[in-house]
Length: 379
Ligand code: GLA
Image (cartoon, rainbow, N blue to C red; front, side, top):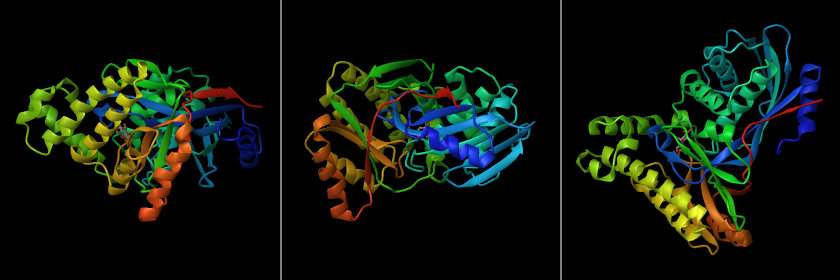
């Protein structure tokens, strides 16, 4: 656990003058490979990381929801039956959105007190919003004595984000936050939602470098990319780009052709990456990561000069197998596959060199692969 249980418990007691009963924790995620494929019904390979949103909760008085955000030092209060948008797409909307989506799915909720704290850096592409949604969903369900399978919870939270908050994200982040297993990456087939755990070899570490170029999905061309992919599928006469083969896309007009080529080739790379991981062929996995980055940069058009430089520096550093931008792009982070004993060299070769060359404030984070949603009693 990354958020200190006792201090969140104390915060809850200060905020509501009573004791919490349950702790619901959900992790952020880094995507190893498989970018902009989830909403095209393709393959993704995320890893839940040891950065968490934690929610301490207890049943409330009547139908009232009281929420306190430690990070924003702000409160919210509303009736559980009538969650409404603030219109500002802020933390309050994500909490209300989850309640809305659970009610919409037919679950009976009750009033609740919630204290929320997180250490997933927001706006970096590490899915702080999915972690918040899943942790809140876990808390609301637990307090109302409802048991929901993690996969279903992920789909409900995706609907919350799509329809209530108004961000058209795919399903990868919520599934990673809900269903991951420690020490493993999570292969997801986003058409069938079939999943498989892929063990991460002990000789590597996953390092995330945050370019500190902030992004919020709602303000990037993310939705535009989704529309381009849908348009490409429609022109090809298929229900999603998952159904397209590389030979099919030659006749498409630009930019649809470039977008489709990325998605089709990226799906292939994810499957090859899983084979490479399983056979411990880390050099091959690294090549696939660099190829993914080039395709996101040149074909899908979602990289930035800062991310390109971080990947280039990584490619010239000893002990680095592969690097690429991770998440939606337009800023945010790179993910790096690094030999366990090469971490100091990585910091010097990538983060410090980047700072020397550009004055960049980039920071690095060594990630541990953790379990998805965890609910435990408090008190
Ligand atoms: C964001 C979305 C995900 C996925 C990625 C790109 O993180 O929330 O659903 O589409 O971008 O791979």
